[in-house]
Length: 104
Image (cartoon, rainbow, N blue to C red; front, side, top):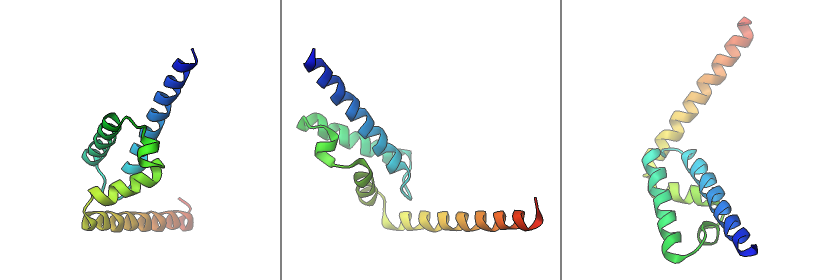
């Protein structure tokens, strides 16, 4: 019974690691669905081939998401996405202030 519990725990840990990795990767500038799918495929293939769990092979899912994005996304695309995000944030702040001033 104890072996089954460890197997179940390992599978649950793997699912949690992959879920966290996917979310953090998707939050990186310039990352789209295709990049997330490619990165997850690479992780699962490596883990299957090496017989390792993702935490052992790649470490913290947040840190690895940043590394994977840097490796998979061209620098100019990531920079463009960051600039776009900054512009949207600035516009949102201006609109919020305008609403506060006008009482809307």
